[in-house]
Image (cartoon, rainbow, N blue to C red; front, side, top):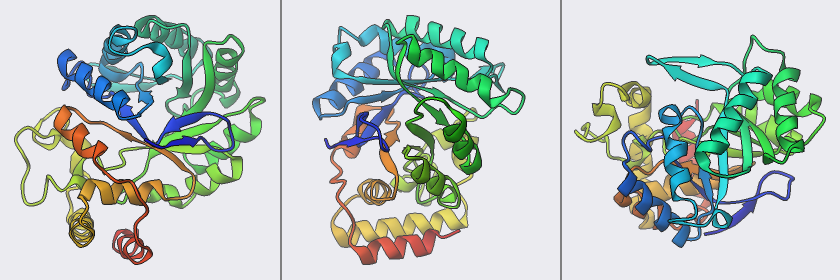
Length: 310
């Protein structure tokens, strides 16, 4: 698997990153072990998690495999702090104290002394930006993080964070796909201007671009689950259906899967360093790893951009 530099930094990640949002909930330990082993064997390096995933249990599950399934030196670890969920209610706290406490707890669960990149997971309008950035700075200076980034910041928030930080912010991790092109308005220009890399989560439109929701909602899918149905529903509209059909048509013409077409388009976009894919089982991961991830013909890209334009 190809490795890419993140923005203008010397930090390198695999073009696909293995996301762990489903771990310890939808993905059990046995499946998680298989996913991790298969991903590393295919040349993947970047493993993405967060303190908020399954209340920290995704990190704990990943940490239990380091030194067992894979060695710590084989992986590039990414985690995030600033969001917590209690009783299905999401709260944001990017204060210095909360962020640093979360980092220490993450390191304990991951069973490591450092993470390769640590993100402030969300903008906190109740906390001065300087305070949030001071937590990232201390993580760098103490060696608990090799690099730091921001996540889910919009364009002006990204530009401001990069401008006022007295250290290098190397990445923004935000949602980006053919179904969600809003980042192109302000975020992508801001990321490029500041020299950051964009790590795209939801690169398959939360699974919709795979085509599995064409005319149906599979019983084992997230859209069929009450707890997660809202995560997918926003893309199950008429616009989404048109884009999914265009991707399927492009795939048939090229002899490539819809997953390959969608990821290849995204990875050719300006500023994108990696696509964070959330395979929940070995079958899904195999389809991802089978993708060519080669640039699409120009006329195909233009057609997809026309049909997905906002």
